[in-house]
Length: 402
Ligand SMILES: [Mg+2]
Image (cartoon, rainbow, N blue to C red; front, side):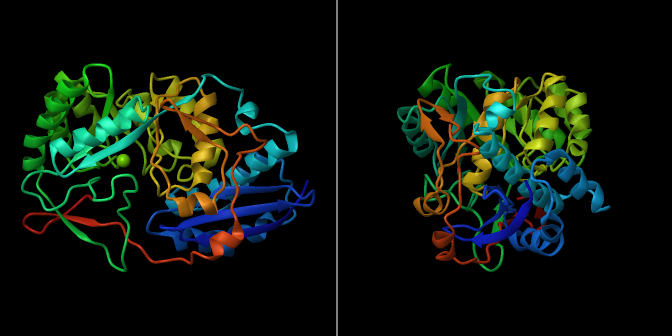
C-alpha cells in the first residue's frame, strides 16, 4: 500500500491547528496532528517543504522504518518542530494501519488494559470561591479529577485563569501579551486554595495543580512541602525541565508527586528524570514527542521506573492528537491520567471524532483507525490567524518563564 498524496492543512476554528492528511493507492486516508502552539507555520513549512516529497510512493505499512527514515535521515535530531512533523506522519500511518486492519488503533497496541481513560478538567477562577464553584461544576459533570488554578491576590493575571471557564485559550494577538509574576505572593497564597478545597470536597477527589515552570527547585520544594497536608494528585511543571538534575532537589524535600513533560520532545530529554525516579508522571504528548511510536517508547521506559503517564491534553492539541492519545492511554500498563480540555464547537465541527466522555472517563472511538477525521471544507472556512502565547516578567521587569 503506497502513499499517493500528502496534504498539510492549516485551520483556525477558534485557534490554529496544523493537520497532515495522507492518502494511499488503496483509497485509505489517515490524519496526524502537527500543531505547535504559537509556532504553527514552522511545522507546516517543515512538512510541506521537506517531508511531503519524501512520503509519496513509500509503503504506508512501514511505520517504524518511516519514523527512523525521517528522524535519522534529517541528520538534525530532536526539537519541537522536527518531532511534531515526524509525529504527524507517524500518527497518520497508525490511522491508516488501523483502517487497513479493520481495528481501532488500541487493538494494534495490545488491546485494552482498562475500562476507560480517567481524565481531569480545569477549574479556574479569580478568587478561591470562584475556583470552588468551578470545581463543584466538574464534580457534577462526573469528573473524578480536577486541576485547580486561582488568581493570586496582588497580581493582575495568573496562568490558567480566564473569564471563559470552559474554553481557556491563552494564545492570541499579533504580539505576546505581557504578564507580571511574583513568586513570593504565589507561594504564600496557593496552600490557602488547597486547604479550602480539601475542606469543601473531602479526601477522595483527585486534585492537581500546574506551576507552569515558574519556580526554582528549592522554591518548588517549599511549595510541595506546604501542599503535603492536602495530598495533591500532582504538582505539574514545578521548574523548567531543561536541567533534569534539578528535580532531585525537589524530590529530596517533598512527597507531593511531581509531573512534567508537556514541552519535552524525546526520550533523551526525559531519560534522566525517569531513570532517576525524580518524577511520578511523564506528560509528553503524541504530537510533540514523535507520535504514537516514540511516545510509547517513553511510556515503556517510564513503566520500568515506577513512572506513570499523564499526557498533556490542552486545546492547543487538536482532536486528532487527543484521539491518538486515548488509544495509547487505554492500552499501556502504566497509565496515570489524561488532561482533557473541551474543544469549541467550531473545532469539533472541523474534526469530527468518535471519542466520548462519560462518568469521568474518555472512551476512544471503536471505529477502525483513530476514529477522527478532518472536514476540509469546514477547515477552509477558518483561515490561519497569527497568535502568540503570553510572556511573563517579574515585578521589576525581568523576563521569567510564562
Ligand atoms: Mg501544563
